[in-house]
Amino acid sequence: MKITIFGTGYVGLVTGTCLADVGHDVVCMDVDAAKVARLEAGEIPIYEPGLETLVRHNMEEGRLRFTTDAEAAVRFGTLQFIAVGTPPDEDGSADLQYVLAVAETIGRHMTDEVVVVDKSTVPVGTADRVRDTIARVLDERGESLAFEVCSNPEFLKEGNAIEDFTQGARIIVGTESEWVKGLMRECYGPYIRLQEKLMFMDVRAAELTKYAANAMLATKISFMNEIANLAERLGADVEQVRRGIGSDPRIGYHFIYPGCGYGGSCFPKDVQALARTAGDVDYSADLLQAVEAVNQRQKQTLFAKLSRAFDGQLAGRTIALWGLSFKPNTDDMRDAPSRTLMEALWAAGARVRAYDPEAMDECRRIYGERDDLVLVADRQQAVAGADALVICTEWKVFRTVDFAWLKDELAMPVIVDGRNLFDPATVQGHGLMYFAVGRGNSL
Ligand code: NAD
Image (tube, rainbow, N blue to C red):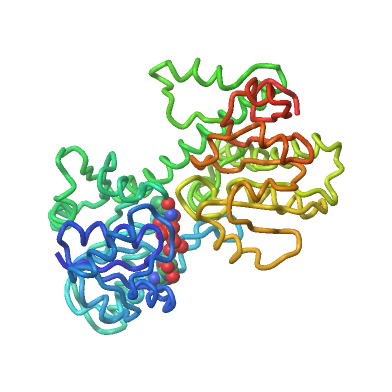
C-alpha cells in the first residue's frame, strides 16, 4: 500500500517505519527541514531502542522516504496518517492547529480519493473538524473528490515503541465506512494474527478511547501515590501494600508503582485535555482534576524531602541527580519530574550534577549552559563531591549500587529515591539516610 505519514516525531516515525517494515511503501513528511535532513542521512533525532536499525534498513530497501514536500506527500498515499503534535493550549485543552494545518494541506493538494487517518491524540469531534476543513478547501478549489476521515489512536509507549506498535494489545479504528475498514485491514494485516485485535468502532468512541486509556493509567499512578503519601505518614511500607493489593486479580500488579509523579508528553496533557473537554459539555470531571492535582503535588515531593533532609538549607549545596528523562529508555524530558526538582533546586540556590544514559542532549537543549547545572558522563561522576543523591528515573543501570562507595562519595549520606529502587534496610545498613516514596519514614 502507498502510505503518507505527516509528522516524524515519536509516533509518526515509528508508525512509518513499522509499516514500511512489513512491505508498505511509505513517505514521511515533516515541516521541520532540519529533522528531515537528519532522517534522510539515516540519523534518528530521538532515542528509541531498535528504531535506528529499522529506519536505515527500510530506507535502504527503498520503502521508507522522508520529505518536506507537502504536495508530493499528499499525492503519494492512499492512506494519509496525521501524526503531528497536539500540545496543551494555555487552558489545558488540546491545541489542534497542527492537525488542522495538515487537513488544509491535504485538501489543497489531493488529486485522488484518500483516507485520512487521525493518529494524533485529539478530542472527541476532531475527525468532524478535519473532515470539514478538507471539504472547505476542496470547495475553495472547486473540486469534489471523495475522502474519508477515520480515527486510529496510537497506544505505543516511548522506550518500547516498536514492540507496542507491532504487538500491541489492540488496534482501534473509528469509522463507519466499509471502504475504510477494508483499507485499514490491509494496512495492519501483517500485524494481525488475532482478528479481535483490530477493533472497529464509531469515530467518537475511538477518539474517547485514547483519552480514557491514558486517564485510567494516570489515575492508577496518582491513586498509588496517594496511598504512598498516606503510608509515609502512617509508618507503613507502601511496597508491601502494593504487593498486597496487586495480588487481587481485580486490581493486578500493572501500573501501581508509587513514585515521584508521572510526566512525558501524554499523561499530563491528555488528563488535562479530557478535563477541559468535560468542561465544554458542562460536566465537572472531579476525578480527573484530582488525578492531575495529586500528580502536581507528587512531582514536588523530591524537593520537599531534600529540603527537610537539609533543614531547608539547600543554598550552596550540590545535588547529584540520576535520571533526567521522564521514564527509562527514552530521551524525552517533557514534563519530567526531574525538571520540577532541578528548577526548585536552582530557585533555592543549589547546584545540580546530573547524569542520564540518553537524555543529556535533550537537557542541554532545554536548559542551555548554566553555572548551576553540570552534566557528567556517568553516574559515578555525578555523585563525586555532591552533598546528596536523588534518583529521578528508574534506568536499569541505577539498580545496582555499591552503597559503601556511595557513602564515601557523598558529603552528606542522603539518598532520595523517587522510584523505590532499593531495600531500605540494606541502604540504611551502610550508614546512608534513605528517603524513598511511601516507605514508612516521615521525610
Ligand atoms: P512530536 O512532537 O514528537 O512530533 C510531532 C512532529 O510533527 C514534529 O516533528 C513536527 O515538526 C511535525 N509537524 C508539525 N506540524 C506539521 C505539519 N503541518 N506537517 C507535517 N509535520 C508536522 O509528537 P509525538 O510525540 O510523535 O506525538 C504525536 C501525537 O501522537 C500527539 O497527539 C500525541 O499525543 C500522540 N501520541 C504520542 C505518544 C508518545 O508516546 N509520544 C503515544 C501515543 C500518542
